[in-house]
Length: 473
Image (cartoon, rainbow, N blue to C red; front, side):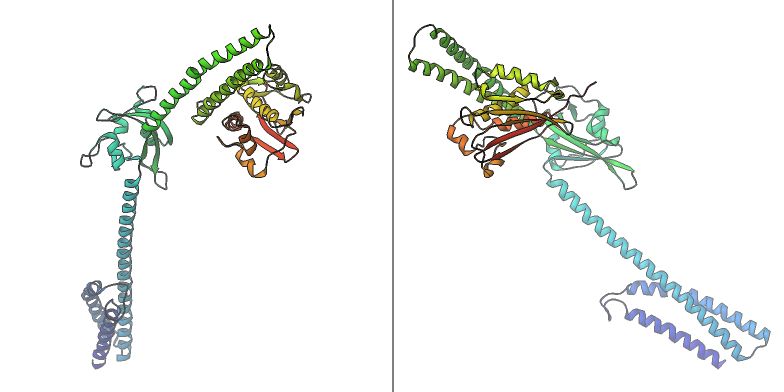
């Protein structure tokens, strides 16, 4: 019995030792950090009565077995050792489970902190966006709006969020021509069907009666597994831009019509006067005066055309009417029509046999060639030849206009196709607005081609561009 008491005392001392070691490992005693705190440790040891009961039952069972078997004390000691191993196993299991629970709680706290941080970042990001941002759930109900969106629709910061504006039509959306957007075709409704909308121009009729021109973008919000959570909408207020565009249209109309009308009268009357004076003898001064009037009117008409075309190209309002064109016949006819205004006798056209037709807008193509030929004739020495070459390369037709002028300095090459920027030689002539090559480049690109220049000082320049081949049906 004494040996049994000694074994029990050893078990108690071991348990107390483990407890003291666990306390020693808690924060604030010996170490700055530990896997758990004192409250969890005490709660774990509060379960010890259950272990004691299990050990007591085991002891009684072992003693009964030993008495029944009439075994010696060493055998009973072995049984007690086995019991201690059982108790130790329970303690290890309990400690492991406690640590697991502590880790879970720490991870939950970390996740909650991360969630709060991400939510704060999201709120700050949405609030700083100048566009109106609206977030809807999968039913189309608004769950978040930034202050810009509230201002757009006329809601104060304290008013509650509206319900399902994208489906119930509380915000009336209209197409640019004033027709209501069907409920199922609004950007929000399309996003809830999984579509993505980018900068759709619409008119927003707000709750306070205003009409805003907005570029609306929308996209679905999905989980990583593809589950649809809702939609996000972005409303960019482009009302001021739309008003400026209307003003530009009015200015274009004024420039292209109201200014051209008196200019056409001046040019027509000057040409008529030139023909009338051919019937009688006139001095050199009269001839130069009439030619100056005609040249000035034509130059002003060209500048007006450059301004109009530049504005239309920038606003994307230029429409091409493409048809198949045989470039050889086109250039022959162009030479005849330009003979009265340019030195077309200096122009030579090289057209290889079997050249396929190109797909182009005849009026815009004439503008491209006219600009390039005008520059080649203007900036090359009188009497020198200007050559137009055509060739087929990589499924496209390449047209080149070459002159034998002074060439272009390398530091000026990058300025050639920029608007209102001219080379030093062009500035010396004081002609034009510096839009000719810029418009030429944009017209070539509108046809799906590209343009480039090769030049060598003292030998001349070659401007080349590509055009798509007209496909046979």
